[in-house]
Image 1 (tube, rainbow, N blue to C red):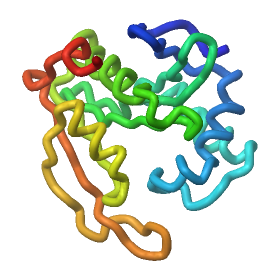
Image 2 (cartoon, rainbow, N blue to C red):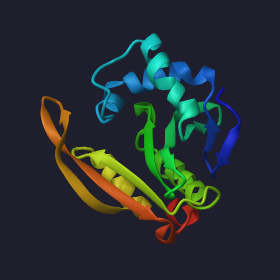
Image 3 (cartoon, rainbow, N blue to C red):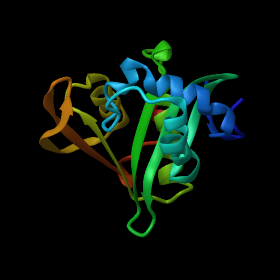
Length: 182
């Protein structure tokens, strides 16, 4: 099972990433529905390539946590990179498609934002999504992020190019997870 509990919510725990999470991360991020919206994932990668080039980042860069419902891994949330000097980080999240639409993403991101603005003391969290990703747009809206800009025709996507939509949330705008998660 994933590492020790880092943050706990009503239904989920966010746990540190450990070696035994590799298979879940590899399988989930190679799933077409997840990979579709991860910029930089052009196609499926082998387990060895994923372990060598991607998985280690979850244990060494920023804050990367496994979203768990009991003993079941459902996804990943992260802050990274974290720039402590300037007080900001990027928020990232993905769920295995088997768990889409069940409210895991909102709770996981809200818990991580509590941590980011509280215990970690960040003043700003950034996020972005590929233009066609309506689920990410709705999630960021529910979390209270403000759309700050659009990098037009920024990423290749399904044979064309799409916008990269950018958001920000300031510490004094964050109402806390208890007001977000219902």
